Length: 328
Length: 250
Ligand SMILES: Cc1cc2nc3c(=O)[nH]c(=O)nc-3n(C[C@H](O)[C@H](O)[C@H](O)COP(=O)(O)OP(=O)(O)OC[C@H]3O[C@@H](n4cnc5c(N)ncnc54)[C@H](O)[C@@H]3O)c2cc1C
Ligand SMILES: Cc1cc2nc3c(=O)[nH]c(=O)nc-3n(C[C@H](O)[C@H](O)[C@H](O)COP(=O)(O)OP(=O)(O)OC[C@H]3O[C@@H](n4cnc5c(N)ncnc54)[C@H](O)[C@@H]3O)c2cc1C
Image 1 (cartoon, each protein chain N blue to C red):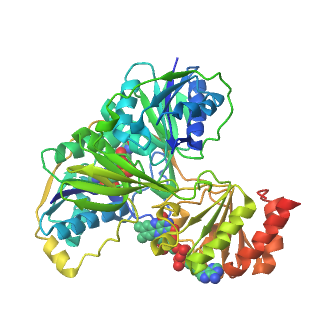
Image 2 (image 1 turned 60 degrees about the vertical axis):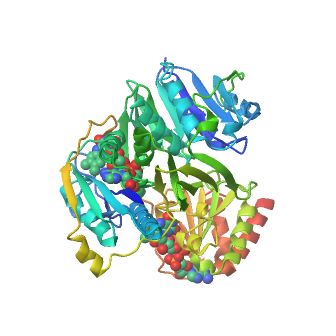
Image 3 (image 1 turned 180 degrees about the horizontal axis):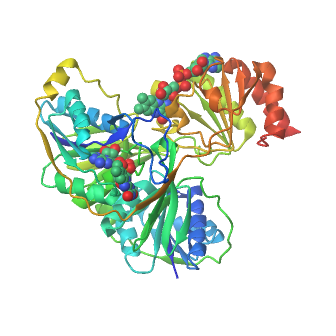
């Protein structure tokens, strides 16, 4: 029996999609290990337990509900203490985290507390004699390393969007637990969560990403990207560092080496030159479209389809055409 | 203000990597090396904090091969006061081993702040900072892109997916620095000259064996060459047709 403990991420009282991806990855771990239970830690303010149903619907055998006002916002110290306590109980062979900002904040703390290794940001894995053998992109995504770890427990994180949530219906079994450390006593205190437009789809969850670069000239022209995203539905808007540096879009929208990694079905780059630091964050997209007025722009080298032209003219026409295609 | 900055020597990424014949690692001959991008921003943050405080020291700590002295000297040329190289040519150490070696070096240093990069652009583990903090029992804030230190407390903003959060913490603390906090300064000629005389201690790294092992390395599948569909808005109908019938994404 190889049981897995999953940390389920929530934000502002809502479960995040990455939590379901993590449960799906955990189910896969148990299958590859010859069976075992998937338990999920869900922490939040009072009422977070009412959000547990989708976890069971994706294969969580038990949800450990940690409700306390001190978990309304991320509380890394108390969470790491609780996770370390649960993972050292002997119940779990594996501890699985999402490879998100929070997941990659918590997992190393827990690994250091337990004195065990950690393999991060896996895009896929197998199990060999209990060891996790997984793929981890390195060197800006230009090399894929296959890493192996066998710990007690073995800790890993999975890259957002690498696993697609798969239904695996269970009756919800919820158990209320308490924090291993006083949540009010944490030295590090998150005092505010600044959310963008919460109706927007996250870049990692979007099937289509429209990314704008300096070629869009001014912040207002990002409206053209927003319109195209809306025409597609299930789409999000990202940007280059040139754009986030200018303050045209928030820092959290930056895609690339020092920003975020995305790999949507369709990536549309408008007014983006295609610097290698940008490509590092999007080259694994399934289909890439580039719109650039310079026919020699490097972005055309990795684009499946290119249009040479003024993005400010092409984008509105494309938006209309996508609307028409969706309507027919 | 006493600040330590942990910096890593990493390959410059503007190259095509090749995998060795046995598939165990990437070819290192011919690679150029520099300080990890995020660590440049950590150095810059430390220098700005020291300048703002009006006094203090910035000490850099690097675990790596003998040649990493070059990166420590560059940090000194930017303005760091001193450095230590924990020398190792070992081929098999992992995140926890590095964190333990760095923590042992930092312990007892009475630093107000210990700064890391968010992630190294080569191994991409994104774990060293929080591991060291845990080992030293210090508060840690990761992915910092806004920072304000006021006496014995700090306020930082950290990046989330599509959001951010504001965090308060007491000093001493560990921070991992993200893109967006600052732009690093270039070493001046005067800085380069001064760096040559700054104290650089070299001692062997004390590394535990790796729990995480590297099985193999490979290059990702190459993208097939694409094509120019046409020019300007006139090309849109053909693009839409291709997205529908060929790429099947619309
Ligand atoms: C350490 C480091 C880390 C970095 N990390 C990142 C990162 O994470 N993400 C990132 O994106 N960048 C990153 N960069 C920056 C990167 O090197 C490039 O500078 C940046 O990606 C350029 O953004 P851009 O393509 O928007 O702008 P530019 O390179 O200025 O390109 C603008 C393009 O728009 C085209 N254009 C102009 N007008 C029009 C028009 N009307 N219609 C259509 N096309 C038009 C131009 O032909 C040009 O190709 C990093 C750089 C460094 C040094
Ligand atoms: C020769 C060699 C052999 C290796 N063998 C293995 C192996 O067998 N198994 C394995 O899992 N990994 C191996 N690695 C990778 C190595 O374990 C990582 O460098 C280590 O885990 C730290 O992770 P990271 O570099 O991804 O740093 P991250 O955790 O991504 O780095 C974050 C920050 O920590 C600091 N930092 C990281 N490394 C150093 C350093 N060396 N000195 C000072 N500060 C630092 C920097 O501030 C950096 O920005 C090997 C690396 C080398 C060079």
